[in-house]
Length: 109
Length: 117
Image (cartoon, rainbow over all chains, first blue to last red; front, side):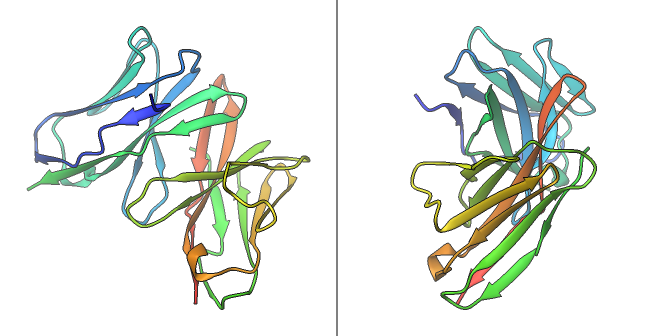
């Protein structure tokens, strides 16, 4: 099983719709979790950290399920500007940080 | 969020030359920085982990003598691509690790696009 696994997509979603991504991780000792977004030919930018209790930032909601070892990202009322690649990131501790390969999202007008 | 800069943002060089890329954390100290590269339409590939004051830890398959990493201060890490060849053309991105307020987060530089002719 890969350390961090994401559906590569692409997810083609009409503007205004709700879209959700999951990311699974294999190491139960993983310490912290993040979602980054990466636009084409740009560096990844931190979107949000993922907390055990779940957290929300505007239209974005992140959740962590330690028992099933996955994290999720929900985007409500999607905008054209949400089109990007979303990277799931898992911090194993001891300077070991694993990136998923990303899920491509295309928001359609 | 914290700011990380990279210099240069792009470079074109002849085959056989060496290229040095700088990564700086501008408003925080980073004991640990990471170097990645990304080929078009592919995911980030971790090259090495750079710790201030000690030798970098390279990922499997990354030649340490070709990709020289120096992390001489808490705000600066450099990657030197020695004797660059066209296959080294890629997008090189650094990140700096910030540990503050109970959070442990990576912030990325804007990347350096290297083209070797």
